Image (cartoon, rainbow, N blue to C red; front, side, top):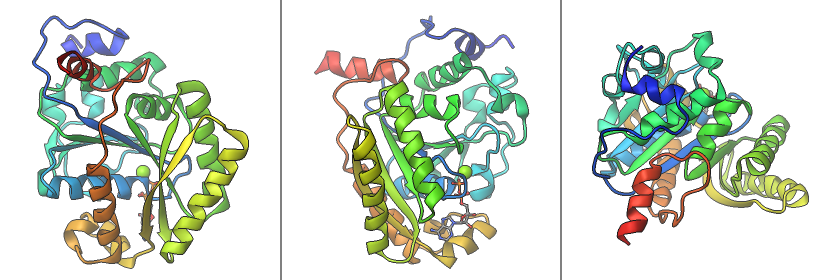
Length: 294
Ligand SMILES: Nc1ncnc2c1ncn2[C@@H]1O[C@H](COP(=O)(O)OP(=O)(O)O)[C@@H](O)[C@H]1O
Ligand SMILES: [Mg+2]
């Protein structure tokens, strides 16, 4: 691969020869959770489609490099994926496709072992490729893999906000705690947004959040948690997964759609962070540019 992208994948912090005007602050939000099957992909995809529906220019990145399925959930048939980008067969612009409500989607490849086994420097390289995306964006949502692997940690570290999805299963709370612990101790992430998914009622969502807060308070002093809301257990969502369409689009008045729209409205009201975090960060240059202008 000879593309400019390849240089970025192999160099941790290269200085690019051609610089473009920054497009403004972009909110970058990583959706994670530790455990598989808690609803990370559905929350990411529907949140992105909901934000796009609100007029936010939104990009949804499938960062589950091993078992990608954003394209399946949204019924898209991508020609290229992140695997082609990494192999130098496609540029980032060629990988981007349009989904429901005009959301821009960067699909990943499923079942490509080499993608799941990228080296830490290559994860940083991937982040750098996105840092120079030449599109005007308001929000970027990143759907991460399960677990606490380097790729998950790097994408969360690079994003301004991390949303942890939990559900009412003991393993979900313990895995979420393990993830928050590693993010905080190894990657300097000190702020976590929590979404309780598949809840029977709002009280259960709150209780789940409080359970997580109690474990974190006991063992982690330097992390603050914020409750972003809950999404009910909803058969309409399950049905929409089968139909390969986002529930917010297919069944807009379903309970899960109303809940995700509310979460999208809350997310859209967040203030942009004032300072970039050290290490890797999406759109680092744009943020620095903002600070210089301010
Ligand atoms: N709010 C919900 N209501 C009903 N089913 C849900 C909900 N959220 C997720 N699911 C079910 O759980 C499955 C796994 O969700 P997914 O988003 O793929 O999880 P993850 O990305 O965390 O592995 C979905 O296919 C869907 O059937
Ligand atoms: Mg997933």
